[in-house]
Length: 232
Image (cartoon, rainbow, N blue to C red; front, side, top):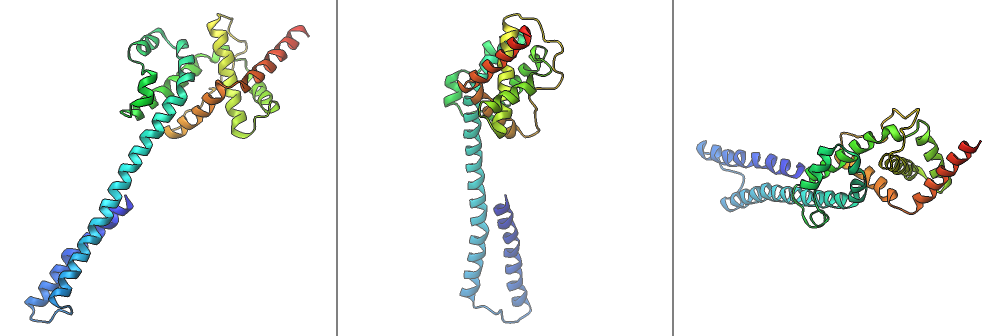
C-alpha cells in the first residue's frame, strides 16, 4: 500500500510539470530544459509513477496468496483437534458438520474461502471447549500446567499442553457420560482474540500437542494424582 501511495504521489507532479512548461510558453519565457530533455523528464515521471503502483499491486497479490496458504496450513493442522471436539457440540452443529463440513481433501487442495473456513473452525473449537467446561475440575488447569512443566514442556508449549490435556480429559469424561465436575471451572479454557491469525496460531500449537504422545505422560500423571487423592 505504501508503494502504491508513493506512485500516486509522484503522479501529481506530472501535470504540474506539464503546466509549468505550458506557463513558460504562454509567458514567452524560455524553459530551462530543451524539448528533448523535457520529453525525457516527462517519460521518467511516468515511469516513476507506474513502477511503484505495479510493485505495490504485485506485493499485495503475493501477500493474499501467502495468507491463503497460511490459512490452508492452519485448516490442515487444526483438523484432528476439530474432528475430535465437534462431537460434543449441539446436534444441529454436528448435523451441519456432517452435511457441509469440509473434507480432508478440500482442506489440502482447496484455497478458496480459506479465511471463512478457518474462522468457522476456530469458532467451533472454541465452542466445543466451552461446552466441555462442566467436566473440567476447578483446579485442573493449574494442575495440568504443573504436570506439563514436570514433563519438560516450557513457556508457551507448557500453556498449550495444559489446555490440550484439559480438553482431552474433559472430552473423554463427556463422551463416557461421567458426572460433571464439582466444583467446575468457570474460566474459559481458550481465549479468543480479535486477530484471527493469532487465534489460529495458538490453536495449531494446542492441536499439535493434543495429538502428541508426549501429552500421554501428562495425562497419566494427572490420573495418578487423582488416584492418590481418591485413596487418601
